[in-house]
Image (tube, rainbow, N blue to C red):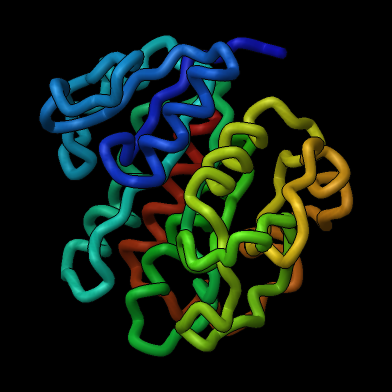
Length: 251
């Protein structure tokens, strides 16, 4: 397996700590972007930085092979725009045209525009797709609502589950981490977006057949996503961010 130097964004949260555990077990080197480096998980290196402060990100991205995003503001918070979206934009711009693999975690139901908060997560996905970097976007179901026998992974596409409850699907935090980290070294996972849920049965030991069965993304959206966020109707600053990320990736 290829050993990577990974920047983990959101590494002090519940999913981020599972990502750190899995990545370290796989032999990768982990940097954790955090305002408080002493909070970084054991075995990782805490790097001082703030997602909302682009000037603070240069050291964090220097020399990395990959970045995993597991960050997120509370849905009820006005910070969703600055953190969930702005954080991805700022890291991508700091990376520029350096060859970096990306794994971005958003959420199942992200194409449901009710409430508006999902729009910013969806816009962060679009930034990643526009960046020109190899990537995988993972939209997990509800964390750790699994029954004891409910760990068989299912990769879905089209994002049609909009209940806003565990009825949309469930998934263990550790399994989210397994998929995010596994995607970084999988050619079959490149350029693909998936909703991640678990059904009854044991977890599969090999993710490659699941990644290989997925359709590749189309343009700025995931394969078979509902076309309900027209680019022409987006705010001018969002369209400008997309153009800037594209230009940055091209050097």
